[in-house]
Image (cartoon, rainbow over all chains, first blue to last red; front, side):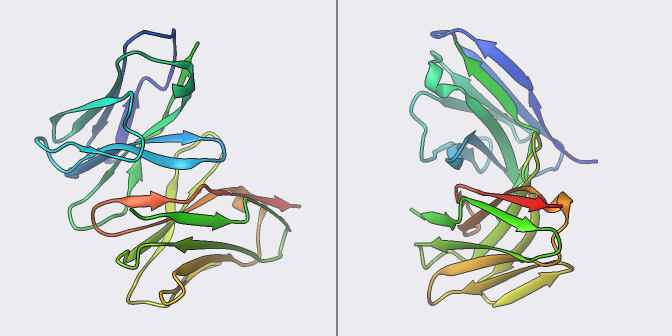
Length: 112
Length: 110
């Protein structure tokens, strides 16, 4: 089945370290998104991309960067991780012309 | 940008009763309103959606209603079952991006 795959699924890292979360999809969708989920705060958009040359900031982009290496790959980087970036991170995709989002399994990141 | 509010934050219902979750949105240009269900430890998954040219949509035990004038939409779950226990997210947007509510924890008591 076509899917959205995130790696790693779980990661513990130290404050100040650089870390990359990766997302790949076999759905053939043009649009990819990174969300962060915190208890009581729902899903907040970090960055999104509509094609390989397109990068857009979401509502909470500070402290994060992204790279859209190919249509199927969208990675999220924390240049210098801090404890309040501890959260569950979801990648999502959608097809051109629709807004229905398909989520990956999530990456649980802990910054100590 | 779009702002989505979701109430209540937690809802407990007896098995077999109905559950209703309400959301409000701010941007009158939004034309797509999906609901996602997230079971514990899993990814959010779409359960039903509605577009702005429709007032109500049903799919078995779940339904969504939309009031564009008042800018609110609701999820209705009838004959609740234990497997309906989850966090439910509403969202609003257009063809480009969605804004999500903070989620409702629904607990179905057997």
